[in-house]
Length: 71
Image (tube, rainbow, N blue to C red; front, top):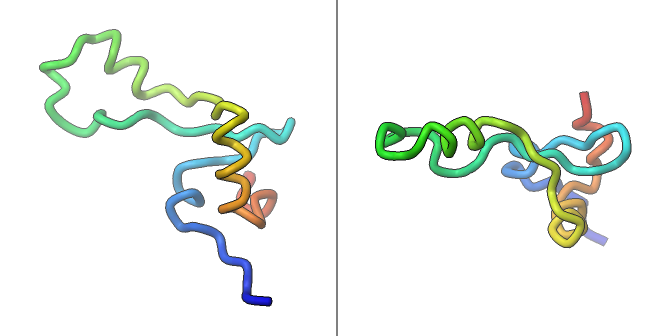
């Protein structure tokens, strides 16, 4: 059986909440060219969101030691 490894991208982008849900930070498209986007879009892109259940199952497979990364 090979070693279980956590995907580095998931380690940086997701955290596990106290109830076991996954929280993602920010959204794509919030690094530059923000003056072309609406204020509403920019503000929404900075907030964290809960990942949908369908995607959470896949992401949790990529993070076998997810409780270790929770802070």
